[in-house]
Length: 590
Image 1: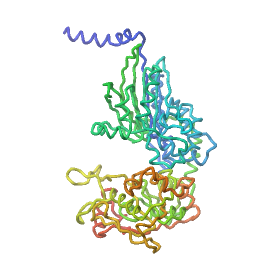
Image 2: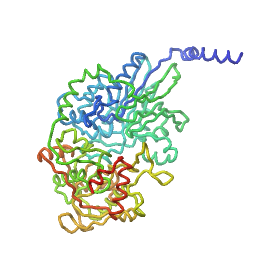
Image 3: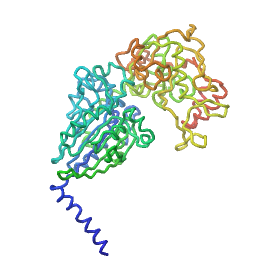
């Protein structure tokens, strides 16, 4: 009985002890991160023409709820806002005079700080330089360095004060941007390693004597993978490497990889760091609740993930931006042409398809190249026969990639294709074997989720070529599958010849590894192979192509095939059903 009374007294007296030992009343602060919104500001998908159950307007309802209980709310955003939905594309490139929806809505919601993401840099200088002035909060990226001054191009960190509590927010962006984006999009900026940058700035931040230090990193995190290979993570220079090697952080908010995280991690000095990641497209919020008191900075920190789909859109916010939403609706509903046939990405996994070859045709026409590489940028999209609208262009071509013309040898072209099909197809032993590289279980069978299979690798790395005729033999091992017969116009294809190749800027900058790991070109030499680049993104040119044609007749080049054909036909029918639920489309294609 005495023991129970003692325990109860401890629980009753603990808050009083907390206050008396600290010398002042504890302050509780709620810190919320959004990340990788990709333009989901409104409760509507302007591409699929349907309502959304999560968006920034939904999240705003939760912000309002928190503020009604506790005014000490800090809102942080972790980047990748300027690509994804037509809402941001419109204000990035179509209407560049009106206030941009991203800073307009985030300013209205009283954000305190944000980082740049790689897709924000992808919008180009004209966009992010303008938006830096429109945001009423600092954009952070300590490792994005102005090559002329040697200082950060964006602000490295900011100090936020709430009720006498000083919170330092230190921001960085993934340093891999040069592997994915063309140099003109970040001219004058160098992206330095995150680990090196954090080591440089942490002493200065500590000298500011903040009560709490937050890392806001547009870079992924995975504790399990880090523990398995710490050296790899130090080399890759991501959030885990910084968390482990740079003491001082209390909380690190992650982004970029679209994963959810709420974990605690012990660094090299034995201090605990809270790791949070809100995923993507506003479906989840990452939240830290911090109670601080005393000269010694007594802290209690907890983290949780908030499901935004449980909230309705904030009506006040929706009404505030009703005119902007109507403007976007009118833009995406504009008819730009007509298609005489359905276009679907589904067929592109099992051989040539009209979906892919329409993009190839545009790339070849713009560049005048000898051949073209492209890939399905979304796993499962379709455009029905009939009127083609602006919104359909965001289905057909997901990213704002430029179009490059590059110089490659015949052997490099073959090696590029070998790399692509190596990640795409399994080596079949007989007609009952698996064709695609599906995610397989320990039992040797495809892993199914709700009855459907998953691809082992991302489909945006499944490049095929147009302009050459070739065969892919999936009975042979990786690296020995491709036989190029000729150019499609009848010219001889020479392994030692040098040819002009059309490829998007992501691939041309080294994204996916097709040119580096596949063709064997050094990353630092890719720029030497670049012959020309378009000024605008490829989606813009596809849109203009359709407008000029008025009516398109999608066709398949059939310039490549997979053999043995009877094995492929049988496997394609099975695996189409595993991926999409019905094989009628693939049968009709045959």
